[in-house]
Length: 347
Image (cartoon, rainbow, N blue to C red; front, side, top):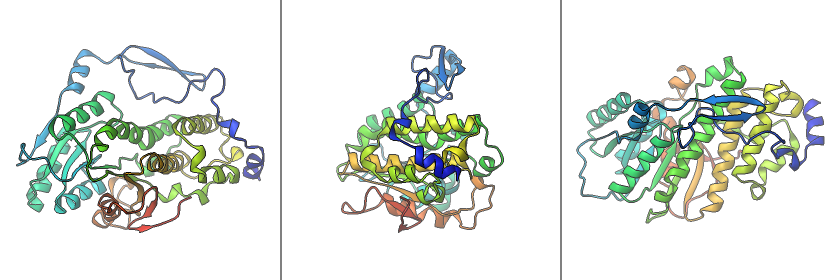
């Protein structure tokens, strides 16, 4: 009943940022100039510390590891996989490399990333996997990766974004801070790395592929607010600014314990909303770049550390949908949702 009441009173103007509030911005993201800045988010002031000189120097260094790679050759297909050092991401790297794609495996932790590359090359006899450090929430790290790809290859053909927060932790803890962290990682981080690499993806001679990892929790049939559900289906009225304003409203209602009253998802609310907007952003990109194949993929309930190894599908199987979407032909579907390897309906 609360959801129905919220749906009845809903209007598109509700997604405007309220006076006195700034649009949502990640409290984890340092200011571009590294200055101390106060940002108001829902009347809560958050102080962002100035990065130290040592941190700035470290984050701007190229940190990469090439394994038996011919520096003179520009590969026919070049892929970046975020969070590629474990779970589904690791298996995606393996399967793409076995298909002849040169893969840049990225990870936030340099040692774990290099160890993953070494393991893949040794176990599968691969020589076409490269490591580059990447923290998707760090602007300097994103820029470093883009500069490296531009200087060495001049283009990018495939981007697979799949980093996610711990799903079980999202069930146990659903505080405002945890919700912000979830949205930062699952949506904003994905959006920022896509924006950083988009100029290189546009240089792909065969039309780039972008694959974003999503979840069953993103399906609009799970959205209690019928009015919002209908509007989310209409891609023509959405852009990034409107997504941001909607997330502002969601976080404000979560903070004020009004999720059910306002018609938001109440089971895994932040995780569900993060994946809902990943789908929405994927469709926006697909409409904006028709020369590319841009899709989102639900890998299934895969047995990984993200869910404390409670999944029922092995990573080898869970990676197949993302790999299929990454290798779609030029006339393949775009702006679509894949449930593992098959086209599904999420909106």
